[in-house]
Image (cartoon, rainbow, N blue to C red; front, side):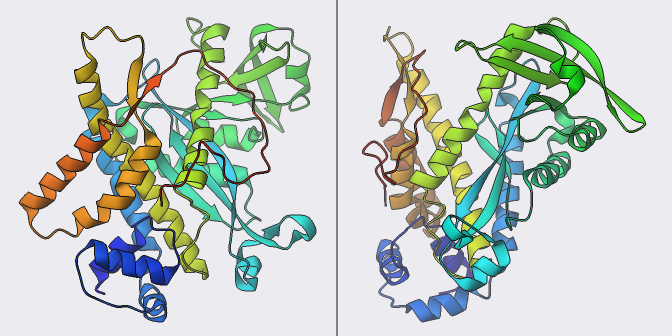
Length: 384
């Protein structure tokens, strides 16, 4: 297996045993080839994990360049959210030693994952997988520096949403120095000055040693009666509490993105047991979730054009779960096609399949957030 096919195989989203996955791969691309699991393991060790990181970054920059005129924004801002998620790893001592552990007895190898997610455009703009000793604020600073380095950074205003585990004077300074705006949910006791404020819209100075930072504080009640406090660098009064309340709740899609990564793309179902293998699979999956978005965007344009003038009760969107299933079945076969004309036709066939697999968008639906003991839910079947 040469370099190109080895890369395609590692991107193939097949979560079977390595031997079965290899046989499935060669069958899909029409080759009568046998490769042992041992040969595959040796071959992948020759590829640095940074190759997948580079492909991931290239895809992000390409997305913002190609879709420059279609980038969705809020009040002129690209809206990002940063959030972390622990990644369960294979139960190998070297992984536990490198990444750390969690769980009962602190014995389960676990890594700290984090993502910078473009909420309105459904793109993971940056992702990190680091040892558990790396705290979420440190990862957030990595995301900020990466965002500043993106090709598209100078073209738009940026705003990042943070949950209440992130606020700190140092992180706010980092954002202001990078000229990135923020909205942060804060806990009580984060600042005595903030705690003493009444409900409403305030401007106050946060003090840290000899330094002071002017922030806007918004205090309001949620529908359930709980008091919420947000701080932001946006001072324009034409955006009031109602606007910021709606904006903060736009952060929710980063939670559903992690659901997609863990339950549909099975990011924790690693194909190797070495540190470099973990990073290879992690960035391959982040690349794939963005590729799925590109296919969905293309298919969604057709769906919206087809729905015009029909007077349907609901608008429709491409089904993400079915998209992943189609890509698992067809993407690598398409990429391995040598004839460029036929390859283009195969891409069109994928788009045509996706635009038929749609679901209605039912507005104003909400569900209580519950913790399930079952790993796999009936409505989240794998597409392997």
